[in-house]
Length: 118
Image (cartoon, rainbow, N blue to C red):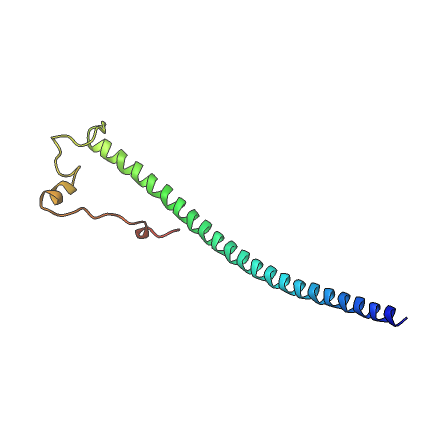
């Protein structure tokens, strides 16, 4: 009878230790889960920010492509309807940057930041 009591006591202690271990594991897993959720939230916010930036850039790219096509049409019209590039008979109006290049100046480059998003 004493042996049975001791065996039951050891069994209860093993069960309690197992339960304590499981509760510690639950706490650790909950902590890991909350960290993963926080990282997911951060990644989602960054993704949405990048998507918004990409949308703005796509819109700006389309606007700049439209402007480029318009300028190309103007150059084609100025060059007599044939846009074959700049030939030897350029008058400086169709190629205003040629004067700058001949005098050692660089042309001014446009930046996407120059055109505000609408």
